[in-house]
Length: 115
Image (cartoon, rainbow, N blue to C red; front, side):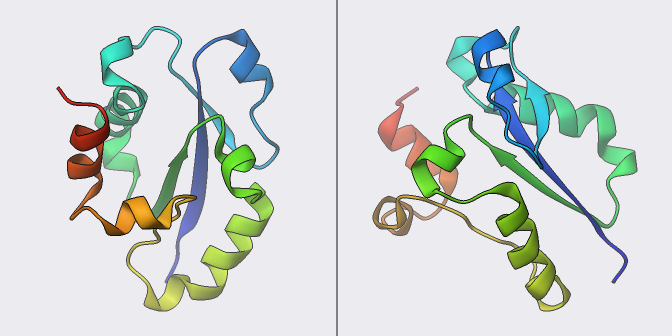
């Protein structure tokens, strides 16, 4: 399978932009509506790049990803590359008990951030 891996770390301002970890691509959310959280830059990226994304592995991460997981981008890339041939989706969470309690991320988001 000919694939490439793009890992994005979302930033909200100059402080979080400066904290984008090595190995991640910064994804700008400086002008996104606050009520949309991370959904705005992800949807914007996907809608403007959809035709270029065939055979791409994409990951979208918060500025606090490393703080919450203690996982570096290179470690993540290595883990994905080892299993990419027989895997369709990778789920990465620092709160497995919360992830397991909902059917999907949208249900989880609605529970924790109603509306």
